[in-house]
Each structure stands twice: as C-alpha cells, then as structure tokens.
Length: 232
Image 1 (tube, rainbow, N blue to C red):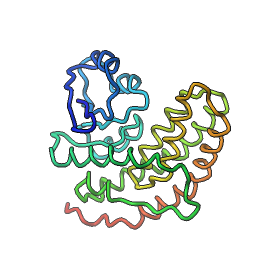
Image 2 (cartoon, rainbow, N blue to C red):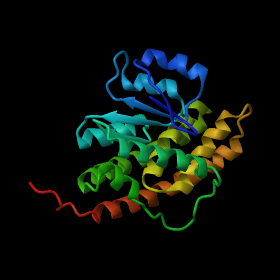
Image 3 (cartoon, helix red, strand yellow):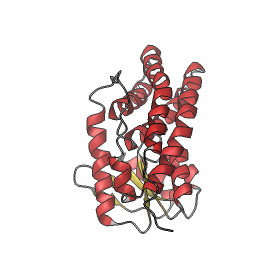
C-alpha cells in the first residue's frame, strides 16, 4: 500500500514481486508493508526501497516489534489489525516531518531532549512497549553511527546512506528532528552526481559525536519510565 502526496492516494500491491514495477512508474512518499509477505522475506523487500520511508504492519510481540523495527529501518511499526485513526495520524506525522526536517542540517549543541510523544501515540501509552523501543535504540545507536563512519571511510557510500536512513528512523521516533535532518542531508548528498565527501565527513562527524550523549539521554529517559502501570 502506498501513500502519495498530497491527497493520500493509495496503490495496493499484493506481492513483493510487483514492487519493482510500481517503483518504476513513480516514487512514493511512503510505503506501508505487511511483515508477512507472500513471496519474499521482509529484508529482501526493504532492499528494493532504498531510502523511501516505510511503515511496518506486524502482529509480533513487543520485544520482537522493537527489534524488527530497528533492524530493517522502518520509520514506524503498527500492530495488526491496523486501526484507521492510528494509521492516518502516523502517516501525517511522517510525511509532515519529512517536509520540514530538511529545512536545516544544523545540530543543536545543547543537551539532547528526548520527546516520547510519537512512541506514546503508537503504543497508546504503554510504557512497557516504549521501554523496549528505547532499549533497542540504546543498542542500535552506537552500532549505526560506527557502521556509517566505517562505510564512509571505505567510500561505500550506498551502505553509508542505508545506515543514515536507519538512524533517521530512530531519531524521528524520539523527536530529534535536528539530527534526523543531518541523516536526510547525508542521503541527499549521496544522491548527487558528484559525492561531496567533505559535507559527508562533517555530517557523519556530528552524528558520531552525538551518539554517546544521546545514549546517555535515552538511558535517563528509560530509567524515568513508570513500569508499574500494567496489572499482572
């Protein structure tokens, strides 16, 4: 299912084998994919998308949900069956943020302030779900920034852009739009006919420097969650 601006036009695709034909016709703003594809593993499907953002619809448990979202770079995950109100709010959040996030690639030098509004929205206030997502992000951030830097140093720019895309998803989920914009900029520079390595080096340097304080801020946020809300 594809959401196209400006009126949210949808195209239904029944199998992963049809995605190449659809992408050849037009580049969508957003893709919504079921985690259980008929003719391909979800990771094979993601390879075809490049930097197109996608929402993953899944029936997995909370822990699997968090791990899968981070691993494959989904900008959001929603549980099945999909609820129309939650789905369209998520679409509006993603498409709206993509329109504004590229206005600046400047990272704030101050303390990272984690915003849980989006995670609280998609989890309907379930702190256990939010905690699992934060744990996944804490684990992934050092790995993603390191792999991004290694790929840049090896001039493997396509891999670098993929890691930037995955990192962007994490940053958007916790409300760090300024740093997500840096990931957008990395992907934009990569797409240019002549890759400007100095710009990439600067952007990646900012993200690598931000990784440790960001993990610290996430750990503080995680420790502050009330996990006594769920009855046994």
